[in-house]
Image (cartoon, rainbow, N blue to C red; front, side, top):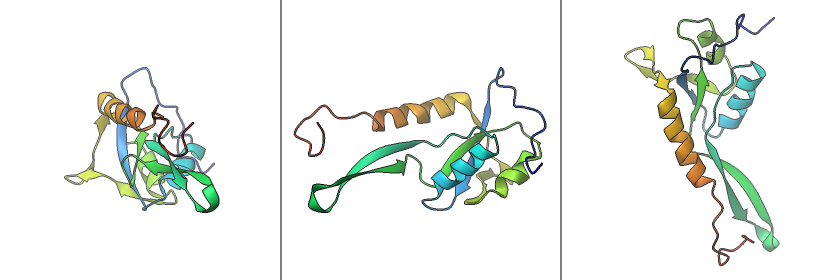
Amino acid sequence: CPWPRKTPIDFRTERVWYPVICRANKERSAFDWALRGALRPYWPHFTVHIHGKYGKQRARTRSVIPGLIFIPMQPGKETFGYVRSLPGVYDFMMVGGEPQALMEWQIDEIRDTEGGLNIVPNDLSVPGWC
C-alpha cells in the first residue's frame, strides 16, 4: 500500500496543522492529491466571477493565501515524507529548520477570512449578480 498512514488521526484532541508550500496556481491539485491520501487537508479559497466575451460569465476559484494548503498531522510521523512527495508540493513552511505548526484557533481565523470573501453581495447594481 503506497499510503503511509497506518493509524487514523485522533481528532478528539486539538489538531496541529502544518502549512504546506505548493506550486503557484497548483493549490487545487495538491489539495486533491492530499485528499486521495486521506490526509484531510484544508485549502482556503473563494470564487470570483469573470466576465468574458459575448456576456459569458465564468466562475474561477482563487486561493485566500496563494501557494499554501494546510494539513493536520501528528508531529514526527512518516507522513512528512509522503506530503513532500505529493505532486505540486514543494515543502512545509519551515521555521528554524522545523516545520511550522499552527493551532486550531489560527485555522479558524483563516476560515473566518475565507467566509467573508465567499459572501455574495446584495447590491443588484453589480454586473452579473442577480
